[in-house]
Amino acid sequence: MFRKLPPVFKNFYFIVGVIFIIWMLFIDSNDLYSQFKKRGKLSELEQQKAYYTQMINEVEKDREELLSNNELLEKFAREKYFMKKESEDLYILVVEEE
Image (cartoon, rainbow, N blue to C red; front, top):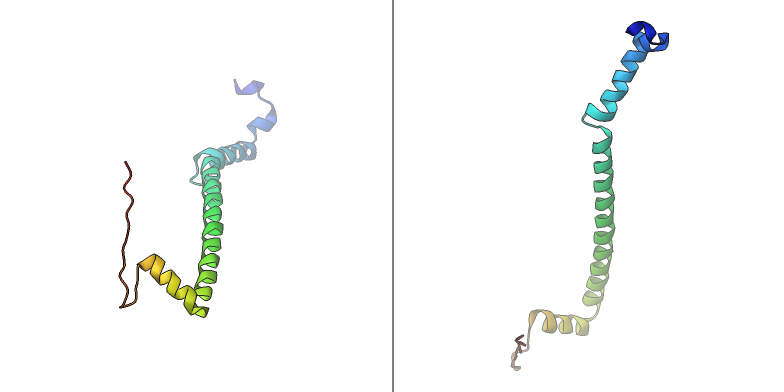
């Protein structure tokens, strides 16, 4: 049976090399499938990083605007946290959906 094989396939180094390649491509913990999954996860994480970096820049810009302008700070506090002056009454209207 092995007599019909070319001598290249009988070579020890060729056999070991083929076994090594098969091991690295399919059996090892860092096989091709795992590499594709990790590359997809890396891409997803890079997109999230870009999104959060953009959001951080927007928040820092808004913070600088709020800290530099007292009128804007008062408007933000009134709208977001329903703060009021002592002489004012605050009415919160809640719209009920049917």
